[in-house]
Amino acid sequence: MSSLSRDEVARVAGLARIDLTSAELDRLAGELDVIVESVARVSEIATPDVPATSHPLPLSNVFRTDVPVAPVDRDAVLASAPAAQDGKFLVPQILGEDS
Amino acid sequence: MSAALVDLVDYDEAVARFDPVIGIEVHVELGTATKMFDGAPAGFGEEPNTSVTPVSLGLPGALPVVNERAVEYAIRIGLALNCSIAESCRFARKNYFYPDVPKNFQTSQYDEPIAYDGYVDVELEDGTVFRVDIERAHMEEDAGKNTHVGGSTGRIHGAEYSLVDYNRAGIPLVEIVTRPILGAGERAPEVARAYVQTLRDLFRALEVSEARMERGNVRADVNVSLRDTPESPLGTRTETKNVNSFRSVERAVRYEISRQAAVLDAGGSVTQETRHWHEDTGTTTAGRVKSDAEDYRYFPEPDLAPIVPDRAWIEEIRAALPELPAARRRRLQGEWGYADAEMRDVVNAGAVELIEATVAAGASPAAARKWWMGELARTAKQQEVELGDLPITPAQIAALQSLVDSGRINDKLARQVLEGVLAGEGEPEAVVVARGLEVVSDDGPLLEAIDAALASQPDAADKIRSGNLGPVGAIIGAVMKATRGQADAGRVRELVLERTQG
Image 1 (cartoon, one colour):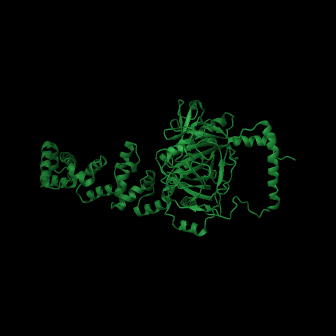
Image 2 (cartoon, rainbow over the protein chains, first blue to last red):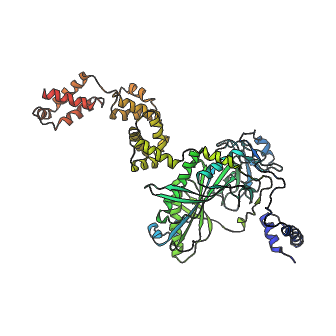
């Protein structure tokens, strides 16, 4: 029984900007399904009174005081960018409209 | 853009036939010294990409740590908006690809905002109070700034490439989301404006942000929908993004009401979409249609521990909240003895702080109001600047008034002194001296001027001598003119009478 369809995998890959070939989609649909089903079994053990956790350590309120640190050197940063102009990162034309 | 071709229904007609419902999302940049998740300086106006660190650039391996002060500010805002503060809350990743978000996700809060279920009372210009329910206030980080280069319009369409500055990326934001605002009717645009203004004033009073609209410290997204009657289900809404002045908020809501009414009138249906606001034309145009790209695949941020605000800390923050703007206005009105309408005018003119400081510097509340709401308000209007941006301080106004109170200058001279101060000639005292504006208190020159006036108007002089005091005003006027306003009109009158009746 497969609960994760090939189309769903294609859609998620699209959202994540991962270009998959048709063969890869076929293979991943099967593999991901195994993973999803395995993880789903956790919910058989976790009863509703077990809160969902997003963090492996029993930590909360890890804070930093509001004190500035030295910024990194701009020239060094821009030197590792594919392209730069006027002290800014140069990126290709943005197609989707937003700002 | 083909904005001019869009059909619009006259606003009054639109609100007569439809019931508008609005919702507003306000983002405020917090005035912390550092960014939300690391110690990069959170400045304004720095050279591009000079306030960046590995975390704000999203470099591999960089790990975020929450700024405690930003959490405190968010709690302050939540408490001031009468919200509950979460027992525990988490950050989440909002995933999308856009160059101004270097990590390919924005760290935000999703299903666990730090503050929720509140309200704020908004006062409209005529004094009507409208309660706006707050759904939530959550913490997140700002994005960098894109500059689109090439093409003809400077907007994204047609741009050849974009330049990105990450100084703003990671600056702490609090986003405040209203519940649908119902029942505002034809006053919906006004309510929207007053709400954003109320929040701006609140941010300043709370000292969590400089809250300067023109710098984009406060940004609003306005949702508008129409329904047939207040009993009908909610209509389809549009969201107009980045409306960044009070006036624009009002105009954008008005425009959307007229536009949507036209769409519905023509038998069409409103498309649920993001729209862009155009300040120059006062119109909106369609942006993205909600689609796949809107699937943000939120999930809890694994690199940040949950925030469990200590209850004692919350109470400490609550106890330290400053007097909020509405309460403060009521208190000041009582202290100053202003009538409701007078106080409203002062509030609407943005003169509360200025008058408060002027009174603190020694002027009477009545005198402070007279200057700020009279001569100075007129000057500000003429020069199209805010009252507070005039080059004059409350202390200078108090000093000016004290010169009037001591009799050294009269009201008319005071206006010339004011003019001098505004022109950068120095303190009121210095202007009086430099321009020679003191009231002439020596009777000698006054009598000379009176004799000259009586001589040049023999008919008036005769009438006065025969007991008809009607023309006294004309003589006083001539004397004031001759002394360039530097005479005390009361004293001149006394002397004229002595001269003619004696």
